[in-house]
Image 1: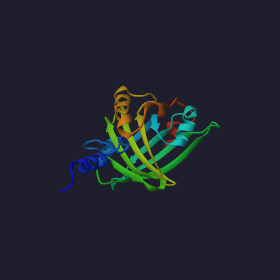
Image 2: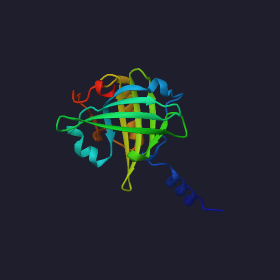
Image 3: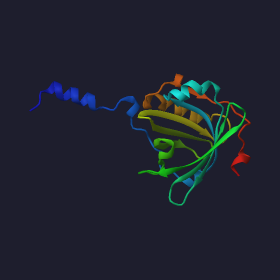
Image 4: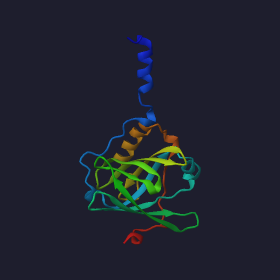
Length: 184
């Protein structure tokens, strides 16, 4: 029989760290309701590239289309420093649960729709793996180019659970560089 102290120490070691906490997925996720145009109004991440650029970033837009196989096709428009709009297309591959995806092409190993009301906001969780480094992201999507209060509140509640802190985040200002007409 093992002594009590080493077993207790082992149990402490096996508990997930804050960055490995169980991240929820939207119950009864409906991709057909999720599709459409979203604004990325806020983000929090431990990614150094994001930390270095967040003060100069502007609000990206994303158009989501639900595919018959459960995947999501996305078209992003990212405002660039030179006044342009960089367009990127990708597919989020459906994961083990409804509302969970991955995008190997973008280094995103775990993508989750944490919470959404479909009409106003969506809180997104991302884990990325690039050059052997793991990073965590939370992004707040909104149907209008302003943070929706309920979504912002849910994001604040989740920040510490995933091992991030509010100082690692930014509300992104609206930009006219990328417009909804680009996605039609």
